[in-house]
Image (cartoon, rainbow, N blue to C red; front, side, top):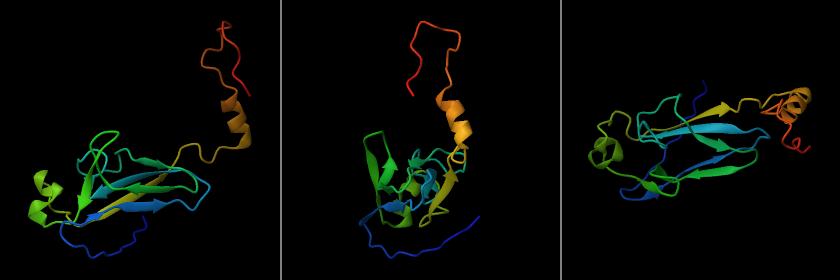
Length: 134
């Protein structure tokens, strides 16, 4: 595991976001934590949690803890006692932001493998439907 440490000085009440840039032709899943809590579900961070899919050459901005598909609770610099982590009873990792990247399964498939998957049929014995387009 490779770790990179960067330190940021923030002022109480200011918003911040996590910006991730993919400079590769491959997709990745990014699982992020703030204060030790998963940004998607607010539970303690784990490599088993789901994350954001970062497409090739794309940028992603995570600007808060996900509350629904449309809303987030903004990340803000605060005192430990006033943090979201304190509300959740998890203050040990306040001030720590983490992102783990996972290669997408199938990202290294051969062209033969891709052809096989592209022509696969979910109902091979059912002839009521037209074959899938090429």
